[in-house]
Amino acid sequence: MVFPKYIYLMAHDHISYWQNCLQIIKRTVSPQSFKTWFEPIRPIRFKENALTIQVPNKFFYEWLEEHYVTVLKTAIKSEIGDKGRLEYQILVDNHRQIGNNPAKEQGAPGTFSAESIKNPFVIPGIKKLQIDPQLNPSYKFENFIEGDCNKLARSAGIAITNNPGGTAFNPLFVYGDVGLGKTHLGHAIGNSVIEKFPDKTVLYVTTERFTNQVVQSIKNNAVNDFMNFYQMVDVLIVDDIQFLAKRTKTQEIFFNIFNILHQSGKQIIMTSDRPPKDLQEIEERLVSRFKWGLSADLKSPEFETRMAILESKMSNEGVDLPNEVTEFICFNIQNNIRELEGVMISMIAQASLNDRDIDLNLAKEVIKQFVSQINKEITVENIAKLVAEHFEVPLEKVQGKSRMRNYVIARQLSMYFAKNFTSTSLKLIGKNFGDRDHSTVLYSVKAVQDMMDTDMLFKDTVVELEKKLQMTLNT
Image (cartoon, rainbow, N blue to C red; front, side, top):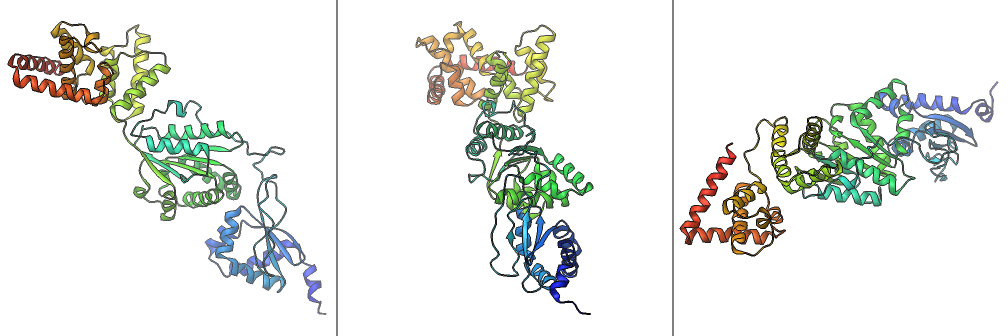
């Protein structure tokens, strides 16, 4: 006996319809595509010629619509008939709904269902995702000292905290060598966003940890849950993104998460030890996305910035460093802020445990633990002392604003030697001598040179002092 087609349809439920569709699709797409894009789909219901399927997220839906709409339409038409249609239900939390858009024509996939399905990562009754942001509360903008070396990255970070996901700096890609403050900046952005927008979900994660999470999600057959979790983050901070190299599956999953977040207006911040163009063994499609926003580098801090950083850190510890000690440390530790911190911690420990003063001698002992050779450089402070002793005038007069001739000559000579014997900038030299500007330093240098050309006794004095400075350098 032949049954009418409508009786045959009634005998099927949503699961069997979808299983039959999968058999058709499986013959059309590659095994890898089938595993990635069709196995995660779950059938929900069949009602009024509409088969509703659940997809993990909006990106998943958009990918199906862009790449497999014809395949899906063929399967639905073959299994249900010309009036059959497909509706999508996107997995979101209890309090959010993607939308409910009617299909433009019969048989066209692409309708969102009105209902949402409970997300396993959301605690019932709580409207936002409750997670530990994994941020270090001590890393803030207040103790991230600004200098020419980091001004662009810091300014972009502050702009992001005022409008997460709404600036042109999305993603923000911060790169630079080890110890220059990339992690500090990432945490500072996260902490500031939480302070200004308590309803935002912020998450900091290292690339190593993210990779381990991917491995566990694959092991537990929970990749969809993993991706769905990350799509609910409002500000994602990923440290050391260069470690995605060679991790093909992790790159694929991060690519999908990146797209979901970016399309949803969420903020992405990444750090790396190199710029996007120099990343090796990372898919080009990912690298190209890293370049979408702003790439900002952190350079080695200049002398003045190192001074400000060290003074700030020591002030926070309640320690007042002599100026000559600060200068000596910052001249010898040039490239790494972490080493500055290490020197600071070591000096405080040595002074505390051995009941010693924090002075230049202690600084020299500690510095030897961090550099193979102490740079042969004298400080501005020592120059001023040497000149003051030679002319038998008080040091505070040389460093002050007095206009008495003997003090002025000693001050000009000190500035002359500071420019020639140190790497200190003109601005900082002037600050050491009565808070004068760089033009005064240049004037003093020229004045000394002119006096040497016209006064042989004065020239002999300069030569004598130069010899003493050279002896100081060689001790």
